[in-house]
Image 1: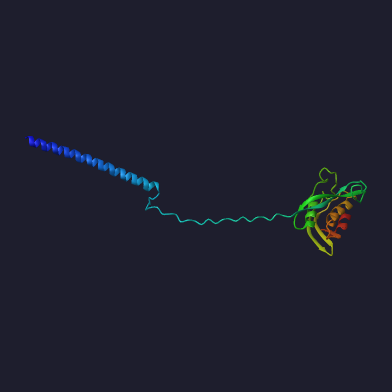
Image 2: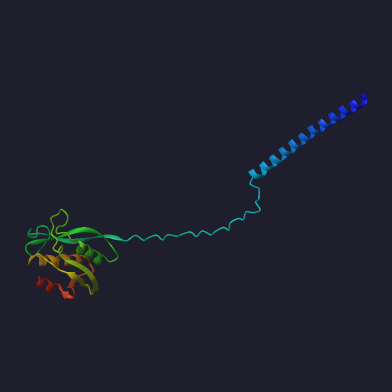
Length: 204
């Protein structure tokens, strides 16, 4: 009877030792798996078999062309000092003076650029200067400018309107002097709608 009790106690002790060992082993195994998984995932070494790496796309660099700056120079535009008897500039017409006003212009053709500036100025007076602009009521555009043997043939199109007889020489001289300022020009022939300027002005 006493021997059986000892056997039972021995079995009970062995069982508890086995269960304790088993629990410790499972704990160690869980720790090893956890630590291993941490290092694998934290280092990015995990490979998903269902993930397909996207095909890299070629990005083409866009080259924006640089614009060549347009050359800028200065030229004179001519306006009229009314009835000052040549005190401010060259005397013309009804005791007026032709006065040069410096202006920055841009373009490859300086003659055309200067004339364009003059024709496009549609105010009766130039700023606060008091200089008169006889072209302000007209609407003219350059059709062509040709130069041969230092003679410029200027063809304009549009409408002409002047404010009286005294405006005729003002109108003519404003255009002619703006062109004649350039060394390559010695004489100017002006046509409006294929008619000589003098003929057009005589009808005003």
